[in-house]
Image (cartoon, rainbow, N blue to C red):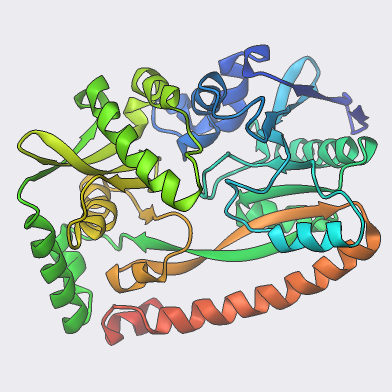
Amino acid sequence: MTDQSPGDSIAVSLLTSLDQIAPRDWDACACPETADGGRPMDPFTTWRFLKALEESGSVGRGTGWEPRYMTAERGGEIVAVAPLYAKSHSQGEYIFDHSWAHAYENAGGDYYPKLQIAVPFTPATGRRFLTRPGHEAVGMSALVQGAVQVAANNGLSSLHATFCTEAEAIAGEEMGLMRRVTQQFHWENHGFADFEAFLASLSSRKRKNIRKERARAQDFGGEIRTLTGDAIAPHHWDAFWRFYQDTGARKWGSPYLTRAFFDIAQESLRDDIALVLCERDGTPVAGALNFIGREALFGRYWGCIEDHPCLHFEACYYRAIDFAIASGLARVEAGAQGEHKLARGYLPKPTHSLHWIADAGFARAVKRYLVEERNAVGEEIEILTAYGPFRKDLREEQE
C-alpha cells in the first residue's frame, strides 16, 4: 500500500525475516545515533538483537510470535521500519490485555491473532516506529496507517504498540490510536560519584537497610563479578541457561528464549551485555543479565540454583546501580512490576503503549477504561514516589 505525501509516495511492505533487509538499512532507522560509533539508545530494536531472536527460534513458527517486520520506502530508500509480529496469545508482552481478550471472546469475537509492534519478551521503553532522521513524522504515519490497514484487511481484532516512547504515544493518539499508561520502576543517576554517594541521598533507615542487605548477600560465601564484552565466555551461558530455566519455569511455565539465543548473544551481542555472576568455588550459583544502552542499563533476567538471603537484590539492583554509576549511565530500568524495588532506590515511572481495536463498540469501552486507568496510575505513581526512600529535603528539591 502507499501513503500519498508531498513528493514521493511511501510504499509499506511486510517481511517475514530480517534476512530480507540489510542490517545497515534496518539500523539506519532503528539506531541512527550509532553513526558516531557509540552505543544505540537501547540494543533491543537493532537488527542484531531481533535477528538473534529469530535465528534462535525464540520467535517464529510455534512460538506465538510470527515476524511481520514492516518497512516504509520512499524514493528508493527505506525511511522507516517497525518490529511487527502476529500474535496468537498475549504472553511475553508485559502490557497486559488478558482481560480484553476474555471480554472480546465472551462477546463472541476472536481476539487472536492480533498484531503487536514490540520487542518480544522485553519490557523496556524505546522507539517502536523506527525512522531515519528527517523522516520522523511521515515515517511514523506510514507505519501506523500500514499496520492498521494490515489488521483491518485481514480481519484481525487489534493492533498494539507496547513500551513506545511518550512522544510516540502522544503522536499515535493524535493519529487516532488509543493511548495507555502503565508503570515500572527505574533508578535515576543524579550525578552520583559512587554507591556511597547514592546512599547519602537516602533516609537514614533506608540507607542502613541497604547496607545490611549488601552485607548479607556477601554471606553466600563466594564472589560476585560483572562481566561484559570479551570477558564473557561461552561457558558462562551454560550456567546462566540453568538460572534462566529455573526462573522461566516458575514465572511463565517455560522459558521464552531458547538455549540457542544465548549462543548467538555470545557471538553478536556480548558488547551489549553486562552479566552479573555469583560464583562460589568457581561454580556459578546465581546471575543477572543486563543490556547496556547509550543512557541506560536495562535489567532483564535473574535466576539461581541456590537460594541465599538478599543475593537477588545485590545481583539485580545494587550491582546494576554500581555499573550505571561507573559507566556514567543516567538510569537503570529494572523491568516489569515489583514494588519491592521502591525501597532500593527505584522510583515508579510511567510507561506507554498504543492500541487500535477493530470493533467500534469494544474500542469505545476500552477507551473509557484507559482514561480511568491513566488517572489511577498517575495517582499511584504520586503516592509511591512520596513513600520513596530518599531524604525529605531531596524529594522536595526534585519536585
